[in-house]
Amino acid sequence: MKNTQLTHIHEQLGAKMVPFAGYNMPVSYEGVNAEHETVRKNLGVFDVSHMGEFLVSGPQALELIQKITTNDASKLVDGKAQYTCMPNHDGGIVDDLIIYRMNEEKYLLVVNASNIDKDWNWIAENNTMEADIKDLSEEYCLLAVQGPKAIEAMQSLTPIDLAAIKFYNFEIGEFAGEEHIIISATGYTGSGGFEIYCKNQNAEAIWAAILKAGEDYGIKPIGLAARDTLRLEMGFCLYGNDIDDTTSPIEAGLGWITKFSKDFISSEKFKKEKEEGPTRRLVGFEMQERGIPRKDYPIVDKDGNEIGYVTSGTQSPSTGKAIGMGYVKTEFKAVDTPIFIQIRKKTIPATVVKLPFYKA
Image 1 (spheres, helix red, strand yellow):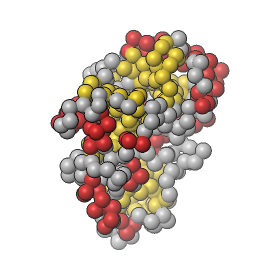
Image 2 (spheres, rainbow, N blue to C red):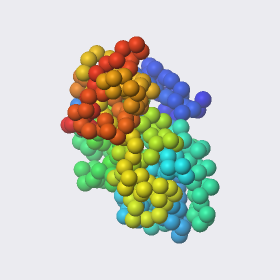
Image 3 (cartoon, one colour):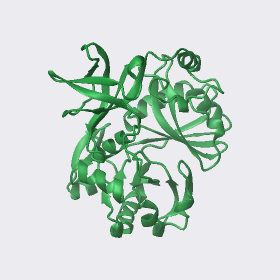
Image 4 (cartoon, helix red, strand yellow):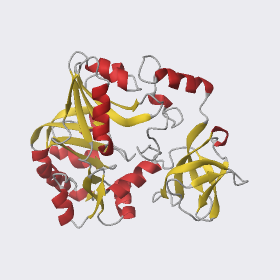
């Protein structure tokens, strides 16, 4: 089990620690609902240093990225980030990731912790143009400062104008007294904020500075359980649940990051699927009676015929409703369609709804 640079601090704070993607990670400190509300109303800080970081550089960097990802990275300019995914040869997804353009020949790829080795091997295998690739995952920490008070609370730590960093843009500069820190207006909560990339040796000092700067704004450390409820309320996909090696971006509702203005792995498959229409779609739904939908619960129609399965589900702290996402046959994807979730021996009614579940 690996530790992050801050594991000992989480333990001192009394966090409940769990194994996650090979790391010893804080799942909660004071409880998922309280932590969730902290991020929605004020701000919280997550240690997400388990995420992977790869540097792709050299004259062939963009060519490699264009081949292995579905989105069009040629549209990126310096200081801009892009959400995308890497498809496999079978029309599924190797991983979803964020690409940061440092300059014309230097890109940072941030991948999911559970997929670091798989992603690295996939990129290396497809690097026929011999771009320079380097795994920086063990060298960097990532802290996510999320919530509506993030700009106000963190401004004292940097000369960079945080309010001027637009969504999915980033700056590199001084933060909390350290140089060369990436400050990115990204995050997976839907409540605004920043992700801070720093070298391992600076992580502890930056964590302490973030908590001190946010003191008057109600900042608290937040665990992975609230990260999951926050992202689910926004309808954001979680790799391993809502997308995986067997799901295509078209059926997962990720057509908006699948650009056919270029050739990439499986692009012909996806183009055909988009034109013909997928046989299933990822939808959001709300339960109409008591019951929490959980991963892999069957979804059935009114006659009890299986039409899909749940990929993610929870009791939403912000809406007070039981919510979920899952794949259903395409004819059941329309908003307001009645569906049923099999929870043990009960069949509970639910309704397909438009995502996101939560609107600020």
